Length: 381
Image (tube, rainbow, N blue to C red):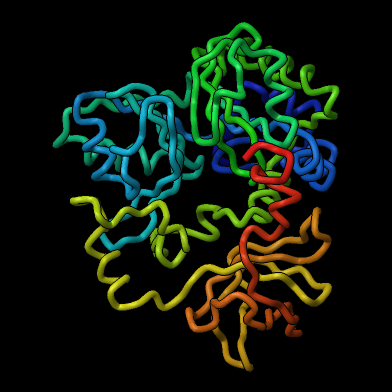
């Protein structure tokens, strides 16, 4: 018997307007108009994603900072109230249990948002390790709707319907506000490489979805002047891949360390102690044997997950994510290769079916950051 799929507050909208697919036990839109127009709407204007399927927990208590510093790799003590950072949780061997964003709402109150596929695993892991700390962990995933409004016109769109001056909310900063009249937590974060906000509509459940539905409609109306598009998981994946961002289960997992994944900026080895620290120190001392890289295809072929990567006829790695870039109009991929072949400019081949296609190791993100992304010229950043 097939497992019953979960639904978000916006299921009726998705059912009427989009093409649905199963993802992390949820019935979610893969696209509405299509992956390419939705992708380009975000790169050039603004798009909105329903990401309510993701996991959300609140951590409170006098030991909140100490607890999070023990179970996550980044340094939570550096977070001021209403600020956020990217981080990971590791197992004892240094493998990545998940990556996520942590926001400090108040001195002793934190908000963690993690991947939909790891909701059950992460909650159990947090509760298991909370026993030695004075903390309370509340799963609010079912009571808070979550949207991502992304693109160079995201701020102008939301400014029309929010009570807060969004110029004052810098990247990786947060605020409480009223959005379309509803209590909302906003963070200037996202998963597309573009400027934008993640929007958390408080106190709304799937059995009483009216607040979430009305907020979604208000954002779509506010973005009409900028040709806003509702976007599905297809565009979310191609956007994050162009930006060089990891997808859990593809590019990172419990057999991959943050040093191999090249997200060591989120690992503070100088912290006194955290789960996985000893293993990561050992790996750093011994040398990282493989590294995540970006591959630009020099051949009109599309790389896909699990395709082998070769150097001078010898296997050196494997593709973990690959696609055709809607923006750049050529194939791109993330891959793990032997560290000796991870240098920018290195030429390799990707075996696509029976043929080897030429590719080059390039800097991430794949696009020109003066033209696209949150730091583009004449834009935010």
